[in-house]
Image 1 (cartoon, rainbow, N blue to C red):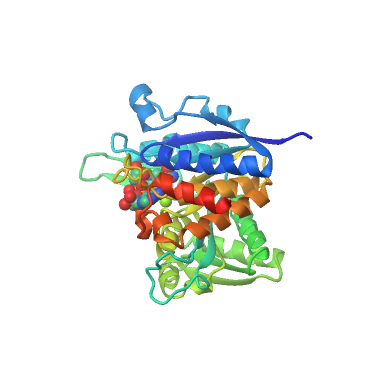
Image 2 (image 1 turned 30 degrees about the vertical axis):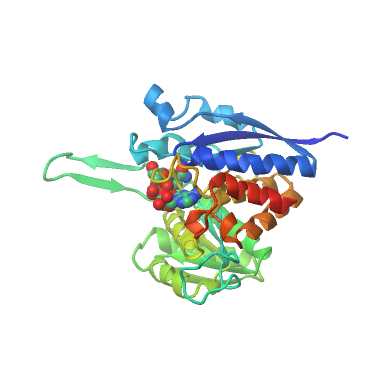
Length: 354
Ligand code: NAI
Ligand code: MG
């Protein structure tokens, strides 16, 4: 019998990135043993540390080095020695764009045992997915500065929304809703942003006709953030532009207890390039090196990676085990009001897997 093998490019990055990725790898290796598949890891030292030594976050042919893998598993990048826009545009954004990872899928779920900052909410109330457009929109390099350092200094930046890019992210959201509670909410701002956002609304309307049987809602982003806090039970799948999705996918995990849990997938649904899986959180310099980072976001991102690679039984097994560990203070990390270190939290997940 040929064993299933998956080749994974690992980019641990900076700060707590390497700590949580090592934790995730321990769990994924245990799953591989148990579910009879193999993971071939190739580790890349692309980080702010590398930038300090070489002047670049990754080598010039970096994208080609990861292209041949089945998936990418990334920790986080960012360190005060390198400006955040340099680390982001030197690594993460090129990976997302050059590999056409246009769908950023970020689940938000309140687990039993996790304290919800919203009074009276239970796990039944908070279970939705933010689908963020990941390669165009407001995050564009089009623009510039004029008359720098003078009184007439000016800056502008052009948001780019294409029909191709907007339609395909809408389709991902509607297809996902089809497998869930069949509801899609659009994040818009067509009252204030008068060109791109009315276009976004039109493409949402067009998507509705392509996907009958899905209920929909649309809110301007300002009131939508209020509804996340006041009525999180309204949401199943939320589709948003690059900027709005970025904001909503931090607010989401915040209402679900901790950013230390939140995972994300950067998907190329056509599978012509490796998709990338990473925690939503960053390198968390305030707790780096202390062995206390919550590994849950990295483990859940790993579960999403296994699901993408077709290892659904392994993915389901690790999610049940992870959920079990949130129920007890001694197996929860400190950000969740527990006492476990990173490695104790991993031990608990392995134990719960049996
Ligand atoms: P952050 O997510 O690193 O930290 C925010 C807060 O959440 C901190 O108090 C941190 O201790 C806590 N936190 C984050 N992850 C945690 C975990 N696993 N367990 C327990 N607590 C956790 O965001 P921040 O401080 O805005 O950014 C720090 C650096 O990370 C910056 O350089 C930023 O650019 C970078 N960053 C990188 C990202 C990526 O690589 N995808 C995403 C977000 C930020
Ligand atoms: Mg963000």
